[in-house]
Length: 296
Image 1 (cartoon, rainbow, N blue to C red):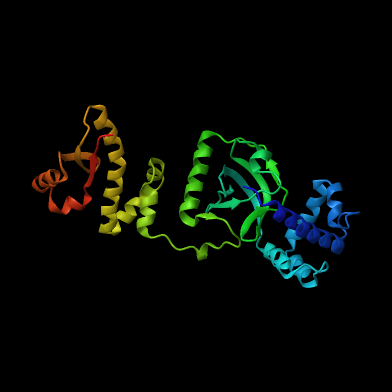
Image 2 (image 1 turned 180 degrees about the vertical axis):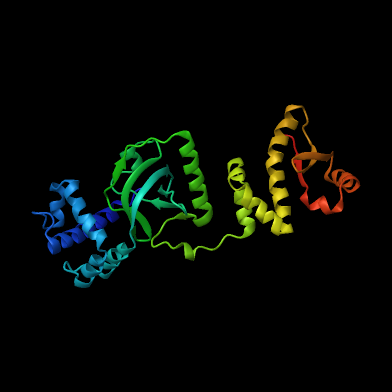
């Protein structure tokens, strides 16, 4: 979850040089004249430079054009990419193997996969999540990092808010995936099909409650989506039936579910299909979900 050490050194070299350039242009912090000077300055002073930089991103173009420190073309490309920064409040939502999830829950919600610098976010913030922070996300060699400073808000989240945030996270993943590079544009994301939307709406009981109107709209406009609805709901009900059937002693067999009810069973699939032909109207056949109960 951290940027490699050599890349961390490169980031600080470039970023601190850019802030020094901003300071020389506007004389914001007295006594800060080189990247090496940053060790002696409090964050509050450095923040003044950050604020001025993000207020006028054209300063990045000016630095690249002037190249006062004779950086290489690859180094200048990294700095130029910082025009695509994302500044705001985020919820550090989940620690994953390859990155930490920074969640922007505002509509439409987005989830960024962010790498830490010298210390992991868990080492800095602890294991209890989510944590709200204010920071700036930067692109760095096709990855996303933060600009080394964040403001942490001492806020705790109750169960209801945590569930709504998880809903936002799931929606962000479904709609955009985990964003791992910048710039990001929703316009460049492949649009979800109606079938994909329906599967997402049906994924959990909470989703089914939240998106009840959207579900009805989809299944009413397309017979194929109505079939998909019954099949997906059948899968959901089958999980419960498998458990219950084993609890009452059944160990094998084939079963058919329609609208949440088990309507037929058989020792083999062929036997089950024959029963369905006898009892089920043909126009309902595609709505039936069939599952097999097996020995564990």
